[in-house]
Structure formats: C-alpha cells, structure tokens
Length: 263
Image 1: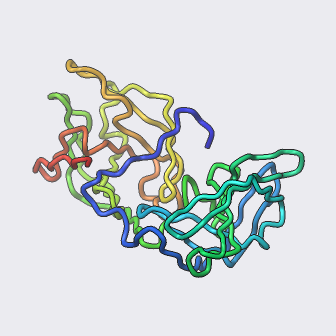
Image 2: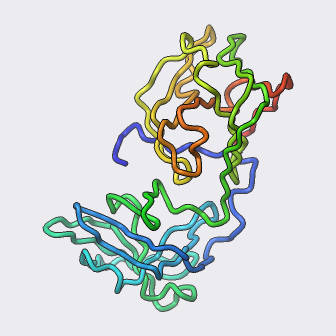
C-alpha cells in the first residue's frame, strides 16, 4: 500500500500483544510468495517466522528461494534479538530497491542463518498460499473470530446517537478490544462525513471507507470504518460499520461499556 493516508488500526494496549518474545523462530507451514515489478521474486515452503519484536512476526526466506531478483550487499550490519543481520538492496530487472532486505549471519537463532528477511513494503505483494496478505504476516498466535450476535448496540458521542442496532457482529481479535460491526441501516449517516483515509489489516483486509463525526465539541476524525470486501475469515462483517470503542460511548444490551485505555 502506497496511499499516504494509509494507517493501520492500532490496538488498545491494555491487552497482551503476543505470546512470544523477540528472537523466537519457528517454521511457517505454508507456501509463501512475494512479487515485485510484476514478477515473482520469491517462492518457498521453507520460510521461518521470526519475531524481532513481540507484537507480530516477519517472514525469513532461504536465500536460495529468492530466484526472481538479486540481493546486493550494502555493507551495513546490525545486531537484533535473533542475531546479526546484513542489509541488502534488491535488484529486480533494471530497478534497484535500496534497503530492501536483511540477511541473517551465522550467529543468528537456529534456522535463520542463510535466510533473508525482506522489508514488507520492499515487495509489491505477499501471498500465503493463494491469498494476499497485507501489512505484515499473520501471527499463528493471533485468532480473529467474527460471530453473529443478537446483542443490541447503541453508539453515542456527546449526546448524539450515531447508531442503534438490534444485532451486531462482534469481532474478537487477540490483542484488541472487541469490535462491534453494525448494519448500515442502523447508522445515522447524517452525522457522519466520509474521509479519504485507507487502512489495511493482515487479518481483515483493506478498508473501503472511513467516516468522521462533528459534534458541538469538535470533530472526531476517522471514528468509524467498514470493510466491503474483507478477508475470507471476516466475511460476516462485509459492508458493516464499526466505531472505535475508545472514542465513543458504546452500550451493549443497555449497559455502557468502559472505554478501552491506550497505554
């Protein structure tokens, strides 16, 4: 994604982000492919998940499985939790992409030596099997469930009722507060203004729209969003609208829920 307005939905930090620690490595039991400049750059069934930070992993690919481009050593080394890495550019045809990849040295964690970890945006597209993945690899320790529910949801802000829905689709995602997706017919769009923001999520896909809300106290930018074409696992939320719990008063079956607190 190259849209300058792109942003990733940020978690409320009162939930644990990961069950693993930086430096952890494990096999990826899926075919991983990457494309750049209209051509395949890598294709492997021997990838490794590598956690350089606790929140989510990256893919590390055997250098021998990078067959559609050339790695060009840039002569810069860094120490990271899993070991030493050396920075490389990626040459694809006539194009050179600086700082595109990091090759792990012999002192790296078991299974990483001789593999390369690409910067996500250095490639134009990533696929697990035949499904495209956005933003970063999906963690095997993150679960996302979208379940239909007969729970009543009312959303208010500064005394205005933004939505009043007799049912919803709550999305339960590891590390995030529960999100409540509502039918558009239950949302008062006279109070919402479309924005040009686009965001992407590795588990849900790319948003189709964001809306801001203006009240007597000011404008809350990008307060709600929707996925018209979510990933296969999140099809129950297709076309529904969700509001940030952190920024509205959300009532579930008549009970006001506490706003999640960012830390």
